[in-house]
Image 1 (cartoon, one colour):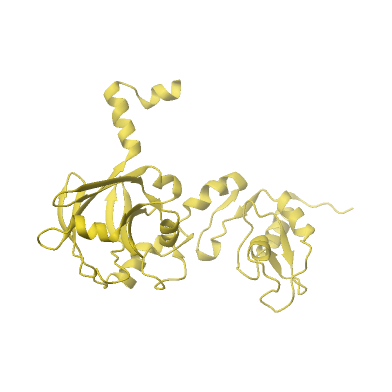
Image 2 (tube, rainbow, N blue to C red):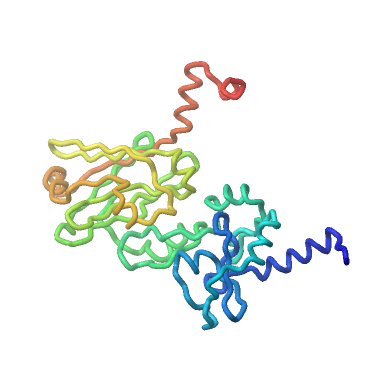
Amino acid sequence: MASFSFKEMKIAFDNIENQLICRICNGYPERGEPRWYRCTGLHQICQDCKEAKGKDSCKCGNPIIRDHCQMTEAFLKVKTRSKCKNVKRGCQEILGEEEMALHAPECIFRLVPCPYVLKGICPEPIDFQTVLQHNQDKHESEKFPLELIGVDKGKKQYSLTPELKMSKVLSFPNVKMECGGQVFLIAGQRNGDVFYQWVHCLGSPDVAKRFAYTLEYQGPKVTLKFVGETIPIDVAWHTIIKDRQCFAYGFEPLMTQFVDENLKIEFSVQIRDLKEEVKDTNEESGISDDADNEA
């Protein structure tokens, strides 16, 4: 029986891996999706395309075989390291399963939905690292009734002119703010009889959890305050509205209670770094990070 050196085995595995690309979505193996299929033309089809998306045929036109490919799955069980699924967009990371699970939500080459809130503008996802440039190139020329009127200790004060009161959609997307080295995008949209507003974090879900925002509307006789966590850029605006993960207020009460004598609405947004606040509290009380680690 022929024997193979470690180097020869590695070359063989690498050659197999280079062929292990889904013919439909061009994706690589992902954690939690161990099953792979083949079409009758012997092209590889990933579990997501076959099962989640319900594809019955390959891009080549041949039908996908119903039973999953045991040979491919056996290879995946042996192989301990794999390429990031975003390799086609430039990611060069090759990691083990646990490391890849940590890397995937942080990968700067991952696809995210465009945060621009008007329906139908950008239906296709974009690279995470290009969000700001995309916003500048595609949407910065858009004019919205929002004006920055003041900044005080990290709190930004805006004036909103409700000239679009009769419009079905009132929006002001992608107003940029920064806090703790992170970039955030403030967005608001009227949807039906409700006005929604949120703060997107240009970071992973774990990074977004570190930050909270306070939204405050000041009317002639009424003050309204909302506090919530920032939302990772990976969450699409329509999902935010559907799941009510943000500030939500009746549009007509907003107009009635907060329009001032100049026919404007004023509101402020402040973003807080929760990790830094805990650190400051510990320092004031004499508790250090080292003490926590020693405990």
